[in-house]
Length: 509
Image (cartoon, rainbow, N blue to C red; front, side):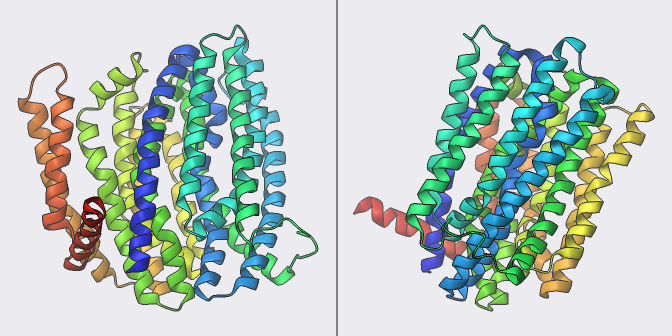
C-alpha cells in the first residue's frame, strides 16, 4: 500500500507539472510559429526534429540506468547502485560524443543538396543544425542523473526542472518578437542553451542529494563486466529508440523531399500535439516504472506483470480521454491555438494521435521487457518493424497517394509492433495473452465506443462558434464515467477508492 501511495503521489506531482508546462508550451509554439513563419518553422522542425523528439530518446536511455538502479534497490544492494551510476556516467559520455560526431558527419551530406531547403535559408539552417548537435550532447550526458531521480522516485525535482525549461523556452519565444537578428539562428542557439541549464540543474542536485551519484574517479571505478552489461543494454535500447526516431525523422525528410518545407510544419505540429497530450500517459508510466523494475529485482514477476498491464490500460485511457474529443474538434483547436494553420495539419494531428493511442496499448509491456533485461532480439524485431514505415512511405509518395496515407501506414505499422510486443513478453516473461486481453484490451472497447458516439453526436447536433467548449468537456465526462463503470477491474476500483479516500481525509484534516 505504501508503494501504491508513492506512485499516486508522484503521479499527482507530475500531472500538476504537466498542466503548467502543456499550457505554456502550446502558447510558446503559437508565438514561435507566428514569428518564424511556416517556412522557417518547418526548417527548424526538419533539422531540429531529432532534438524535439529527444524526450523519447532521453526517457528510453534513462530507463537503462534507472532499470539497473531500481533493480538493485529492489535487491537492497547500495554498493552495486554506486557502481551502476559511475559506469553509466562514463558510458553516456562516450555515447554522447559518438552521436555528435555522427550528426556532424551526416550534416555534410544533408546540406549538400539532399534536403529541400531554400538557398537563402541554407546557412541559417546549417547554423541551427550545429547547435542542435550540441543540445544532443547535453541531453545524452544528463541521462544518468535523470535515471537516478526516477529510480529514487523523486518526481518533485523532475517537475521543477521541467517547469523551468518551459518558462525559459517561453522567454525565448517572446524575445524573438523584439530581436533584430536572424530569428531562426537565435532560436536555435538559445534552445541549445536551455539544455545546458537543464543539465546543470539535474547534475548539481543529484550529486549533492544521493550517495550513489558521484563523479569521483569515474574511469578508476570502471567495472568492465558491468560496463559491458550496461553498454549492451543501453546499446540495444538506443538501437530501438533510434529506430523509432529514424521512423519519425525519416518521414520528415521524405515529406520534405517530395513536398517541401511547409509540409514539415504540419508534420512537426502534429508530433508536438501528440507529444503534449501523451504527457498524460508518460507521467503515469514514469511513476510506475520504478515499481515495475523493483518488483523484478525482488523476484516478484507476478506483481511486475500486473503493474505492466495496469500501466498499459491506464496509459491508454489517460491519453484517450483527451485525444478522442480533441480529434473531433481538431480544426477549431488548431485555429484558436495557431491562428495560421499550415495545410494538412488537421488530418496529420488526428492520425498521429490515433497512432500514439495504438502505441499506448502495450506501453506497460515495453517497461516489463526492460525490467526483465533480455532485450536484444526484442529491439531488433520491433525496431526494424517500425522502420518499415520509410520504404512504405516512399512508395506511397512516389505513386502520388494522398499525403495523409503516409500517416495511415504509420498507424498500421504501430499496431503490428504492439502485437509483436505481446508475444515477446509471453516468451520472455510468461505473460498470459488471454489475461492481458481480458484485463486491458477488452476493457477498453466499451468506453472508447461510448466516447466515439458521444463525440460524434456532439459535433453533429451542437452548432455554434465555440462548440468545442461544450463538446470536449461533455465527451471527457461521459468517457471518464464509462471508464470507471466498464474499463476498470474490481481491484483497480478498490485502489482508486482508497486513494481518493485518503485525499478526502487530508483535505478535511
